[in-house]
Every structure is written in C-alpha cells, then in structure tokens.
Image 1: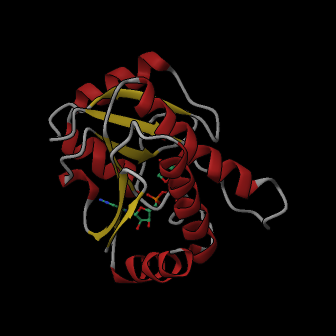
Image 2: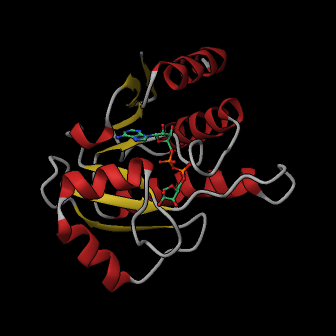
Length: 176
Ligand code: AR6
C-alpha cells in the first residue's frame, strides 16, 4: 500500500528489511548497541561485522534517540540505529519515546541528506509494544514529517509477517 503525502510517499510492504534498497534502513536496537535478536540480529548478520565495529566506537544510544553507521554489505548505504521503549504499562512515557525513536531517525536521515528510509515496527517484538498503538504512532509521526518537510521523499515501513502488515494497513486507512 502506498500513499502520497505532500511531495513525499509513505509505503507499507510486507518483507525483510535487510533486502531494502532505500538510502537507509532503521534498526530496532538496544541502548548498548551490542546486537541482539529480531531485526537487530538480522541486520548485523546480513550487513557483516563492520556495522558492529562502528557501533562499538559509538558506544551506545539512549532510548528514543538514533545514531548512524554505514550499511556494510547491505544494499542500503546506511543503517540508522534507534532504540524504542520497552513497553511496561503505557504510563512510563512509552508513547513519547516511541514517537521520538521514529522522529530522531527521520531527522538524522535528513541531516545526512538522505532521501529514503525504511523502518521496521520498532518495539513491537521483544519490547512488547502493543501493535495497534505502535502502528498509530509510527504512521502519524511519518505522515506529520512528510506534511511539514519536503526533504525526505520516501518513508517505507517494512513489516515482518502478515499480522503486522495488516495492522499497519488498517491503521493507515483510518488516517488518510
Ligand atoms: N525485517 C523487518 N522486520 C523484522 C525483521 C526483519 N528481518 N525481523 C524481525 N522483524 P524486535 P524490538 C520485526 O524484537 O521490539 C533486539 O534483541 C519483528 O517481527 O526486532 O524493538 C534488540 O537488540 C517486529 O515486528 O525489536 C533489542 O534488545 C519488529 O521487527 C530488542 O530486540 C521489532 O521486533 C528490541 O526490541
């Protein structure tokens, strides 16, 4: 599914983010940037050891912020590593932190002059963020950015599995 927003495009696809050819792909990392399971493990496996070497030098990333490395062996030139919140009960600032993870990543891409960026559904795996609420925050943050700024041309959500894709599609339909 694809929608035009001002001069930009927001796209939803079901798939594996490591195959994306956007300028940057986003990793759902942890604060130590030490790798892990889920999409983090997949990106480091596909991208090779140079990404982890850069992560070690950077040293870490607070929740809700983002850092950038090269894409190693990936097709994407860069990996933006962001850290989403661990969902507790919804009263610990989770929504703000998730929004900030998306927005920090988009702003970092913009600062680097990048035009296209792919996101996974941050925090919805090991970090247990409820999928529907996470989708609403992800989509609204991306749409608001595309409406306000014209530097990023394409924001893609690369969603792993039918359930995640269908939830994002349902929430996007409500927003357009
Ligand atoms: N492409 C796209 N999405 C994927 C892929 C992939 N190859 N693999 C998994 N997903 P998670 P989190 C989806 O757990 O919840 C790690 O250990 C997955 O189905 O990867 O932010 C880190 O090191 C889900 O929809 O990230 C952290 O410690 C989404 O990506 C912690 O997990 C996010 O699931 C971060 O947890």
